[in-house]
Picture 1 (tube, rainbow, N blue to C red):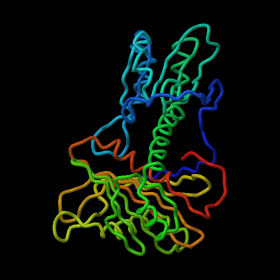
Picture 2 (picture 1 turned 135 degrees about the vertical axis):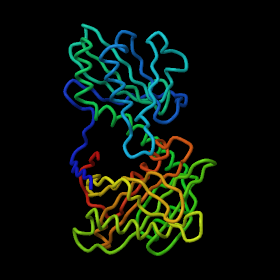
Picture 3 (picture 1 turned 90 degrees about the horizontal axis):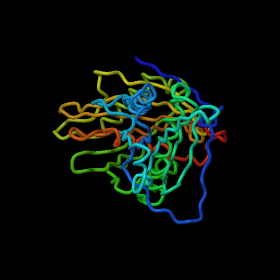
Amino acid sequence: MKRFTVFLTAVLGLLLSGCDAFRTLSDKRLPASLGTPYELIVVCPQNDWTGELGDTIRKVFTAPVPYLNQTEPLFDVLRVLPDGFTNMVVKHRNILKVVVGPAIAQAGIAVQYDLEAAPQIVMTLQGPDEKAVTDYLSAHREEAVYALEKAERDRALAYAGKFGEPHLQEVMRQRFGVEMRVPKGYVLAADQPDFVWARYEYPAASQGFFAYSYPYEGKQSLSEEALLAARNRFAARIPGPSDGSYMTTSPVIEPAYRMFRMEGRIWVELRGFWDVEGDFMGGPFVSYTTVDKATGRVFTLDCYVYSPKLHKRNFVRGVEHLLYGIEFPQAEPAEKARR
């Protein structure tokens, strides 16, 4: 089985050598930002865009999202010339500005927020020449992508906090003892002592999650084999469209497994594809598992997407954000960590 095991103990933000990160504060009321989630405006001169720097920008920000049924990029990149960066464009939600000139001492990235609209992130990639800027972006691609992804995630969490589903949040609190920000639109589909299933139905797609809990029996409970067995056991409670059909994990492509630390708590991620036993349905899933030491039980949040006709990236990102809306009242105190 493909294995990715990562322990992250500190936030790897953009506070790197030659890289300034700061938040712009303003008393004025800003207009709402424009654009769709995971859309990125790149403001770049023609000669830089058609050269190695432009190739690197596209390589970094349009890299394929892993474990989707079709190839989809991290971001939908739209390029504009500096002369075209006016009017409505300056109010876009995600902006990357490229500035190259000998007056700039060293390459780096500056990050600003809410300059012309809110919520908005504006990243300025700058340096004395094209090679210096290209090398810098290549070396710090993960941090640059993370800053943009976190901005999108923070927007989703803010929305869920403002427009949530109180009933579902109460169900999660009663069943598992966790606080969870569930965005408006999710409907409770099943409520059992150790299992909760909720779904968000669109005309041509579906997002959903199911949470479950069971006794912790030592480190082996977090092994790949144990987690897959548990997933299939609880997923079988989700019925398919035909009599006797149910959800299961696809055996065609083995899920990826990795450990990470977030806010002092160790989580295990499984990412792969689900099928329906006895019918023809499927799609991507991602599950997050941790141990609730206060209760001595394993807790899993399993998220899935069904979208046979539409692109899946934004639906998958939407369910991924659910993890960041979970809080354990007695979580271990520790330094916040980026996964």
